[in-house]
Structure formats: C-alpha cells, structure tokens
Image (cartoon, rainbow, N blue to C red; front, side, top):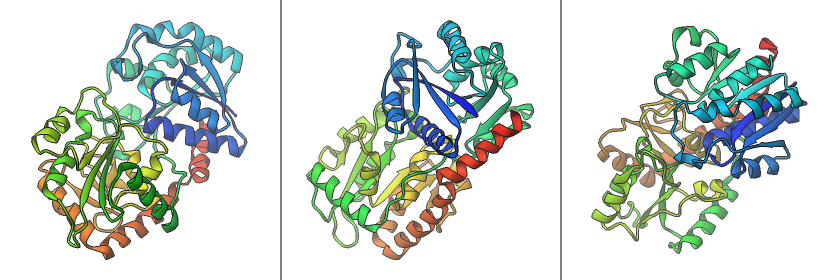
Length: 372
C-alpha cells in the first residue's frame, strides 16, 4: 500500500522519530511510504537519511517550530488546497497522521480525497472539540499506550489499538563503553565520573528540574566517583523555569551540564549511568524506551504510560513524580548497587527487543489491511 505521512517540517521530537522508524520499516516490508512536509527542517533531513520519498509543501504557519500554539488555527484550513492536491497527485491508500496539528490539517483533505485516515494519538489530555471531529472522521486510531487511550471518548476507544513505539538502536557493552569515553571527553569530565541524564524538551510537564535536586543532593557515589547531571534538550512552552532557578540557587553551573539538543542522541544516552524521566502525564516517553534498548538503567514517573512497560525493580524503577527526595535516593541506589544496575539493563534490553521495527510494522500493516 502507498501510505502518506504528513509532518510539520521544522518541528522534530520523539514522536517524529517513532513515526519515521515505522515508515522505514513499512518500506522494507514492501509498502510505499511518502513523507510530506509542510516547510523544511530536521524532519526532511531524517527522512532523507532513511531513504524515504519526500514531498515538500508550503510552510504551515509564519510561527516557527514550537512557537505555534497547540490548538486549532486558521492555518489548518488554509493547508487544504496544497494537501488535497498532494493526495490527488500521490494517490495514497492511507493518510497516517503523527500529531494533532497534522490531524487537524489533513482530516478534511483525506475526506475530500476519499482516502482512509489513521490518527496516531500520542497525548494525555482532554480531547478538544476539533480533535473530536477529526477522530470521528478517522478510520482508525493508534494510541501509544493504554494510559493515553483512557483520555479518549468511549466511542473513539472502540476503534483504537494500543501500540507502543518501535525501537531500532540496541547497544552492547563495547558500544556503551565507547560512548561513555567519548561524551566525557567532549564535556571535559573525568573518565570515572558518573552521569545522571534527562532527555527531552525543557517544558514544565517534563519536570527536568528534578535533576537539579538530585545533583544537589548527590555529589559523589559510594565509591567516591564524582556525580554530574546532564540535560539534553531545548526550551519548549510552557517552559520549566525551575531548572534555571535551581541551577543558580544551588550553584550547579559546573556540575549540571546543559548542551541543548545533541546528535547522535543515542551516544549521549549510552554515556549515562542512570536516566531519569520525572514527567507528569507522560503518554509513553520514547527516551525511556530508547534507554532500555541502549542498556541504561531508568527511573520513571508513575504518572503515565511507562508503567505498562516498566516493572518496578525488574527492568527499571518507578516513583511518584512529586517530591524529589525519593528520586535522589533511587539514583544513588542504582549508582551504588552494580548487581541491581546489571539486572535492570539485562531485563530492559530483553523487553525492548519486543519493540523491534519489523514486528512493529507487521502489526501496523494488519491495521492498514483491516481498514483498507
């Protein structure tokens, strides 16, 4: 089948990564994915790197990247003409939207072009009136977790399948050792230093400021290794101002490092001894799934879909997202207990392999066949 995947070209995150991994796996199965971008940006670069066909449309809005409000806007309707033209030219069997902006923009073109519509639901919030209309017009909904699906109306859940994101990169001991050395050299850190990382946009919901509390509490582990914090990601509204306040108030400028967006992100993740995911209302969190695949112990929030993949004490640790004290205690526990760390890594990678792209693509193909 020919599948059209629409994106905003200048906005890229974990959901885009997951969607492009899926598109590439579908192509390897024999499907014909076509990547359509409104404007040009990193999405185009990543799609080209994967050998996917790309069609560029005019930019969706004069507001760039994450400055665009996440609500229905006039641009969703002005995109009708170029989007419908693309459908008539590409003639896809299915339009598969990855985010709510694209769902709002491509529902009407898909309807007018008589093309089946699949909506990927990656949120943990109340369904707005405009999204509700789009979901009613959709032929199928894919939710990234059962937790995320609970936010859907009952009628929408009846045509929803829960499907975790696919993973494509798995590290062994040698690759992790190389990444540890390389990243520490880049940051000017001692080779023996322990690194506790947080990955993702610096939005309020992600609660990256918890890492500041952890690093302020833990200066070294039980064996005397100095402990540093690493935050990889850029600002996104509503911004987590607490991280900047605590950075100054705790005097952590030398111990809490913020290099912004990093590439390749998997090297930076593999260099960490522990990765924290303290977010609230987290639909799934691709960064934690990637950490499992790479082989890094994780501590994750109980408020989200990760509790469906993390078994506390077996392949990760789960904590309430509130007070930071337990996060510091759990981090120190992993740093000091090598047996626990190895257990979490071994079981985490075992689970992550169930999310390999080929198996994921098979399940997505079954959905396509069902509706087409």
